[in-house]
Length: 211
Image (tube, rainbow, N blue to C red):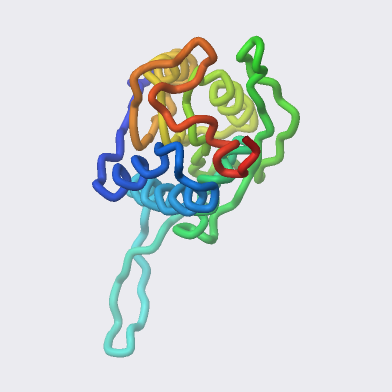
């Protein structure tokens, strides 16, 4: 069994922007802007291990061998709806990335994942995949989404989130120990309703102003 990996991005800018997002008085437009900025910074950390290859090029002054990304293009897969908040910043960083969407929501009574949509690029087995969801709380949604993505043949995946709960990390890695989790913070615990504490509220509602 693969060793489970959790990486917390402790860059000062990430932590500062996350603190602004936590504040209940932060407006919807400001929350969206901050999330886009944080997701770009998270993307920088997540993509640091992408494979590169050397190619011969001509600069205005000389011939040189320079590094380029190798292999097929990266795939970003958003878990709807809140995952789209991370997607924009990631695409700012890697505009050539392929994009997929998984429609899954957490039943408010059972807290279990319910799937309603799935559309991803082909050849996932040959591409690095980053799965996007701001909150890893109970992890039921992330577990179901990654299971579905794996069924297409995907082998190299990373789970990217803004916040994670210890319970969610444990549950996720019990099922998917081979998928690293990259997050900006690991908070204290889940409350009785499955929300991360201290957290920042419902990410989807704060992104879209629906509550």
